[in-house]
Every structure is written in C-alpha cells, then in structure tokens.
Length: 371
Image (cartoon, rainbow, N blue to C red; front, side, top):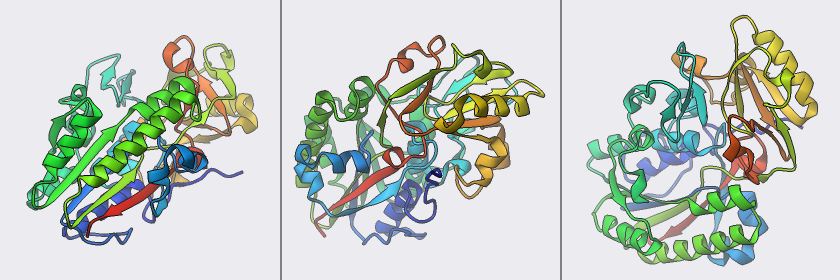
C-alpha cells in the first residue's frame, strides 16, 4: 500500500483557502471553482475526518445531508500544519509549519509549533512563518476578516503566525460563538472563520467512534445547523476540518527501543508523523535502523525522499529543509510511535493523527448557501 500523497493544487486545504478569497472577488486562483458570494463563513471542526463523518451519519444528520466533496489535509495531517495551510493558502513546504514539533535549525532543540513552546529561546511568529496570511491579503482588499474561537487562543504565538491580520473574537460557549459569527457576518463583505476543537479532544482521549466522541459529533452537527441559520442573503458557509483520526491498535515506544534512539539527536513530530533528527554523520544509520525496526508498520523515508515524493507540496523552500527530520517515519494502519518518557500525555492517547492514510488525510468540504 502506497501513502496517500495530498492533492496539492487539485483539492486540498490550500486550494480551499485560495478559493475562498476568489469567492469574495479577489484576484487569484479558484481551483475548487466555488461560486461568488458576498460573505463567507468557514466552520473549522478540529478532527472531523471525512471517513469518520461518513461512518456515523446518524450522529450528524444535518452535516450528512449536505452535498459536498472531499479534500486532503496535507502532510503531516495535524492542526499546526493544516491551520498554517488555511492561514496562508500555501502547502506546508511553502509556509514552513511542517509539523507539531520541529527542530530549530542549528539550535539543537525542539520547537512546538502549536503550543508555541520550546526547550530554548522562542521564535517570533513572523520569523517562523513570514508569509503574508490570507487575512492580511483580504484586509488589504477591503474585506472584513474575523476569527471566532475560545478566548485562550487570543494573542498566542501560533495564532499570530497563521491568523495574522484577522480580528479575533473570543467566545468560549457555543452560544457565544454563534452570536460572534452573526455579528461578524453583518459586515457587507466578510470572511469569517469559527473554530470548534472539542471533537478532536474527545477523539484523542477516548477514541473516535466512542460515546464521548459521538456526543461531540452531535454537538458539532447542531452548531452547524445554528450557524447556517445565521447566514444573511448572498452568503456561503463551508464546513471542513484540519485532519481526521485513527485509533491506536499497536504502540511502539521509541523510549523503550534502543535501536530507535541510537544516533538520534532529537525526536520530533508526533506519534503518527515522526521527524527524526540524526546526530552528525548518523543519518544513514538512523534511516536503516528505523526501517529495520518499523518494517511494514510504517513508511520510513529520508528527508530527500519525503520531499521528492511531494509529501509537503510541490516544493519545499530551501530555508525550511532543515526543519524536516533527516528521517521521516509515518506509521500505517493503527500503529503509533510514542515516546513514553519524553511525551507521557501524548503517549496515553487513544486517537491519533498525522499520517498519510485516508482516515487522516481526507476532510469534508460541505456547503450551505443563501446566494
């Protein structure tokens, strides 16, 4: 079985982001061919994989009844990377948010792109991700942009990297988010994003398909229906996600297998998409060792092989190449490569994402229109 290479330039989150600007009348590509609208609402549901939604239509009757299509998230299929893609309209190889935990080139420590934490000096958001965001470009074109999300996200380094230029609307409760959306859509030309993260959290802790996850899916469905009711005439709502999820069936603990630590300077990424940074001169041996241990349980590639295969997009900017592991290990099926000592919380999860499988890569694109 070959990995699912994301459909960059055809039907990916990067293509959605570019198309939404075109919907609002901005010059540029509209690869998804979306119809013009005066206002656009993007409902971003963390962890709502297309295959996961398709498996449980009874829990989400409103969403399941909507016509739509399937997009690929991009690699790795993780929030930091996907939101970087949506925030810039570019594949990961262009925007540089290439994973959950990445090595800071030449510095010898890991940087958590989502939490914006590090085992060394933090990096300014505009330095780590310098590309102009879609929100900055929209504002320059006279479009009102708003991001409605939990208040704790306001001003974080991650938000400054991928949502730079947006008007942040802090709203914790669902009622407050729906009201925040209604107010933002009152603008005559508006690009509004509203975020829901509890489905992903339930999947990590209990597994997708669990009673807790299904309860969250039902909440998402009701929220989507309420958001649709807020749409003024001439508007379009699109529902999508940053990634899907799989439940772990087999755990390989890198902290308990000496061969997976030998010659490794830093172990980055996450359990379904590992960036493995080798000590000087050890890249070849580390690649051989990881392939030998993981065997058919994972796709294991050198940095060069991963880039040439197009996992991160048609090209990777030269300055971003050192952020990618010397070895990239991408588990198949339900295998996860945990690090119980270094990452105790993440190692205890039930649900994971990041890999190049359909369950993680495919995300829905559902539309509600009042045009």
